[in-house]
Length: 593
Image 1 (cartoon, helix red, strand yellow):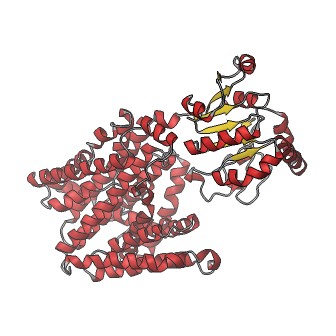
Image 2 (cartoon, rainbow, N blue to C red):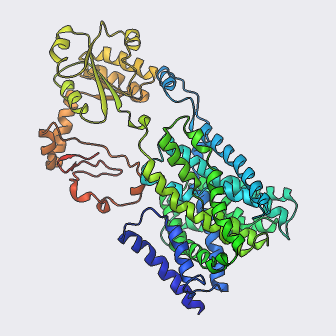
Image 3 (cartoon, helix red, strand yellow):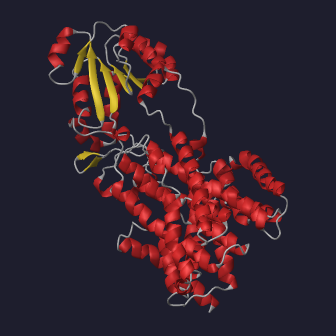
């Protein structure tokens, strides 16, 4: 029977994603579905799976691996202080940005969560539903980082200010409750040591980090399929820190969480994260979630009126503990998105399961009370993503077009400006020649300048742009303007250099400044060589609508997917792919974006 239960769990873990994909069930997190399936297979309904020592061991390993991977999800770059902007352009752009930073909004939001959670825990205790105020407050403070990340990835928001704010709130929603749980376990555990011994876990984590920081850099040279050193190191970290945590009277999940943080700080390759995810989410974690559902006996819950009454009260507690986030987010984001972000912050499951498991081990909570907390958490994971997907829409600051300013109107730059204006670019051309202004002003937006002196260009707003293209015939003047633009803070400066002698003299200096160069002879040579090597480019060369793009992968949905396995690969013509590669293509007759 023991083996049959494990077979049924693994079969369920295999079938659940297939059914969700078949029926396009994307509004529910996989973890929630696995818990629901566990309820169905457990004593609540079918009763075909019962707990046994083997499954209990795998469940414990599952929660340890889950907390380890949760530690690896934290983006520590969000906690870094950004350097004060030094360039004139950065200072000017900063004035147009919101005065409320991502970090400020996230910290203020989580401060409101702490205050609300403690207040609501006192109310729950006053109502006589659950007396342990400390434990209730910890549970109300939790946020499910994994579910939040999945939702933000789906809408490609991880790099946007809104997404970063919600992500940081969720990260705090795992870190702070874990710290609180550590002190809770140390205070109420039967074998707890002095609280100061908890510092040994942090010292051990810091020691392991510094010991393996340089060694981790060697993995590229010595790692191979038969060794998997990065995975071995990860499990060494887990076992070591879990052992130390339990030795000083803390819970093992704290050690696992710290192990994930240490591995994250070592900056592993994405392949390492993929392999560890495969081990965790492919085997151990589904067992943990399904067994959590198996342990949730609905029949016993509904038989106890007091426990049954707890479920809606706790659900309201989970919601109200995050309610003030709406007010904070609305300081920078529109109201609908503030509500959407709050609904995602309400979702909680991962740390709740870990906290409940610790509390049951400490005999601080009954199975019925634990089930009420868990059921209320499951409801948040169902409703939160639904509300988020319904309400969220792009923020205005995320829809800003890239500013492109072009100095010089000629038969090359004007058609380029016309084509760019059709896409995500806001293009303005500048000329100091009245004849050119009269000739091209009807074709593209052109502004007439009095002169090309750098001081005048700054005052006229020519340098207030994301990309500056300097296409005058005078190479010396172009060089002078380019240097001034870079000093002003223009992110990208593209300069035309037709004078080969001047180019040879200035090329190293320009490269050091990060200035990009082009000239007609080099362009012609490059085009002819590409035409010989890749004849399929002829169609793009003859068409002014077709475009060649350098593709930078920013959508994590496609991380580690081979080019041949991209879902839209059948609509792309790949003409050249070298090293990191240049990916050229057309998508249904239009450029790939």
